[in-house]
Image 1: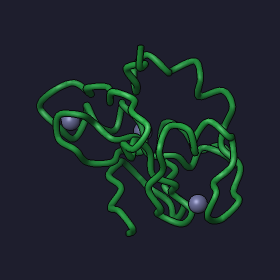
Image 2 (image 1 turned 60 degrees about the horizontal axis):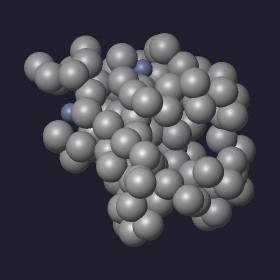
Image 3 (image 1 turned 90 degrees about the horizontal axis):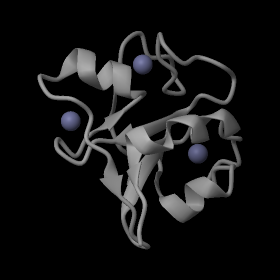
Image 4 (image 1 turned 90 degrees about the vertical axis):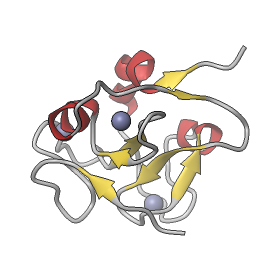
Length: 105
Ligand SMILES: [Zn+2]
Ligand SMILES: [Zn+2]
Ligand SMILES: [Zn+2]
């Protein structure tokens, strides 16, 4: 199932005006509005509330690949490569872990 990605100045692979490196293609889901955004800055510019991180569970789809628009679980995302289209993800995103995800115990 393909998903819609929200953001500012999005390109075809879901890169936004804030993060637009070759591997910046992952969109993150906000737990409050349950929609995918290119980054938290895009979210906060487009919504009246701040980005709410997603709780990580085995089954929850928490990110969306901007290249193929498939929704991924956290475990799939952690492999560093999209399991559907094989596009690489930006490893620097771990710096923003706390913004996007609530770790499981
Ligand atoms: Zn939201
Ligand atoms: Zn952005
Ligand atoms: Zn993909």
